[in-house]
Length: 116
Image (cartoon, rainbow, N blue to C red; front, side, top):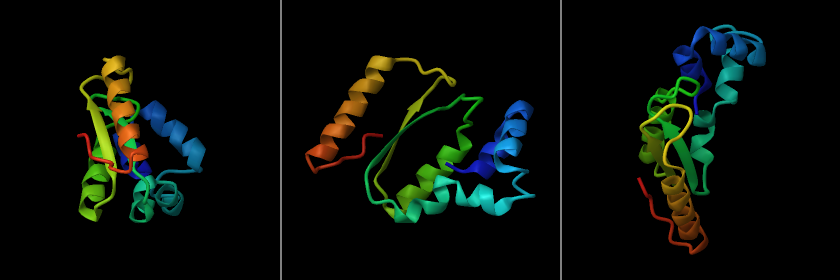
């Protein structure tokens, strides 16, 4: 959701990978980190989006998604984040698939409702 926050919260190995992907740190190539962050483009979002995020994810730390979710709510954007209590590997797959299908059904039926 926000590459700068992801970099700040990442472990050193992931930070090294990001430096390779972007050709530097967020301070060295700030425009690349900004341009490639979904948060930067959130104001243009028009379709409902479902995101699954874990609270204790060491590979995709949750702070960036918390910021994204708050900003989406402020802008009135149709973003639903399903929060999992675990880490990068998610727990109850059946519960997730059920909620994802409910989300999709709401989109297809034209009456998308936020599910949490």
